Image 1 (spheres, helix red, strand yellow):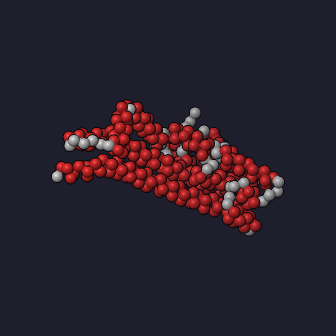
Image 2 (cartoon, one colour; image 1 turned 60 degrees about the horizontal axis):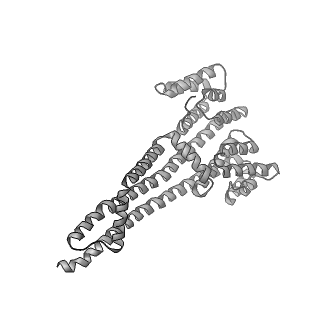
Image 3 (spheres, helix red, strand yellow; image 1 turned 120 degrees about the vertical axis):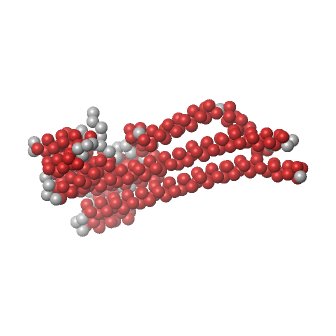
Length: 347
């Protein structure tokens, strides 16, 4: 089985093919140009095989489907665009969608990875203070005829327990570091973790908002490629199946439309759009530019989701740094206070 293209690679393919079609270059010639540009990379072979299909008279959607490196729904989107004479618009819509997925994946990885690394560093610093630094202070106080008592003594006892468990702690830290390394560098491993995360938490909070944005973007992409509203919602439901809450919202919205409810009202009732966005969509539908309205709504939701993700990361990281500073300060303070009591005696 061939390895699937990344979101970035699919985005580049769609955007370049859309530019070729806009410039009057046919599918076969456009694919040949791509094959020539990517001659030195594995993509060159993929595009060369697609050129053969185009030379046999196959449409772009068939070439994409037979290549085996694109998700199946990409060919479906392009096929819908070809049927309605909107191939260029379909390519642009798919390119925009995968660009947003690429950006969102990077933001999610950053939002999850950086706090985890900071937490690991914080734990390591605290353990080193308790197991290596406090015993040194205890020896110094012993030479002065005193010892660590109270909170400092409790921390010293905790440090001795941790020191006895140091092999287990090192093993746990090693496993955590390996997990973070695989998460940051292993695409398949990261996707499996993200899939499980979406299943459990994809419908809640900031991550729920990101999943809702993805569903609206799929809806915009499908409508821009020539799908009917009902087909677009079913398509969005299928692509949101890894987030059950959002998938259910898409299904409920489709059911509402079958009952005769307008799209804007149905999307608001089912939680896909806010009241403000549903009113904007209603205005777009009444003016005959519903597709443009849903596209602009998706873009705005994407920007708001990006801001919310950055705000979340901006709150977590300073909080962890503050917690590390406070913990370090408290540990050192509990050790230094007994020294203040000894100073008059020493003098």
